[in-house]
Length: 259
Image 1 (spheres, rainbow, N blue to C red):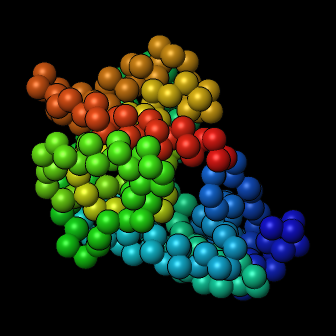
Image 2 (image 1 turned 135 degrees about the horizontal axis):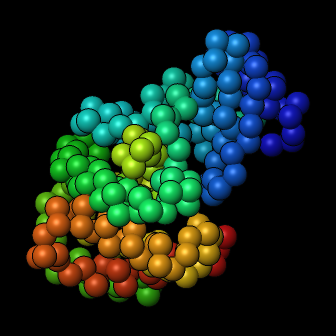
């Protein structure tokens, strides 16, 4: 983006009313995101990518619609369009705030919040999406990752279900320790749910990710344990998914090195 003038040109062409104000949201690692408010006090998330990546937004809109159809709380997508030299997605601004913000302000609620975070991911994995295939994102990007991926795959792959593949405290909204929305479906795929669990576990365990999120060790550990309790409904018979975690750790290290 070339600054406020470029953004204002884009906003003028989106037919979302007279704009009162807007604010760039930090933390996004892919698209540029603005919180936009119009004169009717309606709030939108306006996401921007280079024009050549418009198909990414179209695919994400498709995935969000699948999630919505299956009862997962997601923001409504008003439009995916091309403006100037940009691809633009306009969505409702979700209710609540990120799980990370809730966790940092109310650390005493980490267990309750983590439990609901896990329950929501389990709800997602109960969805059996017939209208989608495996995302390119899930395929290995190096020989080492391919070996880890295939090794995990060889261990009794289970039912094909809906995977978010970036389910972490910056991509999930909450209010009063209850999950209110799931964001950022760019990596979503179908496949074995243990890949999705491992991805979340890796993000909640890696030191670099912990520092990026700004969460203390003890707090993230408490939240992580509550997340697993919520996912497995407090069952003591949690599955071991170490092979999947090895794959997820390798993928996360590569991503953070590239970034």
